[in-house]
Length: 386
Image (cartoon, rainbow, N blue to C red):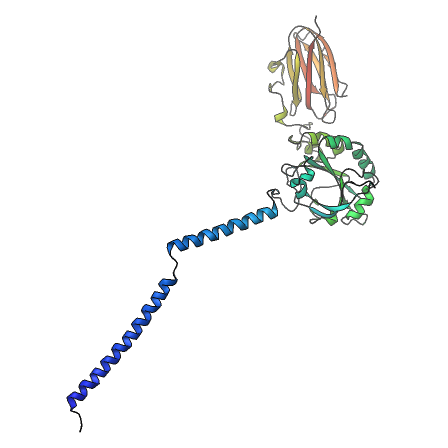
């Protein structure tokens, strides 16, 4: 017997609707399950903060590890090469430097030396600077130059400077090795002091290519910032003032470069700066004379006109002028207050001038006859009365 048509249509619709409901239930249930899983996997605020703290601690630990590896000392930033005053020398490294002898044999051991180790390590704490003595194998004047430097070894040690013997070129005009430097310098430098290296074995063999322009050559590196504070000059040999430089690292030595370059500043080469001048400046003319009395007065002639004028009161005076002939030649003059007599003059250019004067008048410190540079001085005024 066949079912009634209406009943058949009802069953078919019921079956289709049921199928759709089941299908929708399956899809909806699966989506909710995925969302629930996703929500379950997402960290809570507390968990996220804990993870961030762990990551931060890991970063701090990594930074601490890097600090322990590199140490707390940071070498100053520098360009790959140096050229002039004020330049910071790059961290040059030699793996085979000849170090000062420490054994009873008196032989120099070979080992690592770097500017960074000099700057950072306690092994070099006793030094405030490096005095570089640059030589070449072909230089005929270098042996005498090295002997002169060696003769001042104790003065250099007292000035807390480390001598670095640096061989720049061999006879083939190629960068010299440390082995070649040892042969060149060994007979002129004591084994207990200084370090011997060749530029060819440095990590930057071209570091000084634009710095030196002849041999022998010299320069001073100030330790606190590893800057060049002095260099060899043509007219005034570096060997004559290297101890002074080491003892006065904060002084501006750049004016000496004027002499090296042959710059004629109206016929006058300054060997000091305006900061070295006396507080009574300007006291160049008689009308601007600075009054002084018994005592020691420090001054300097660092600019044109190359003269300082002082006024001394009435009395009997012994006057002494002291100066460094390596920086300039000075003379001492006295004019009576009425300009009635020829001035007294002392111009030995030997580093010490003296006069005996009676009465008041003008005392003048000026460059000596034919001298082209002044410098710093000490003027001592002593009363010889009673």
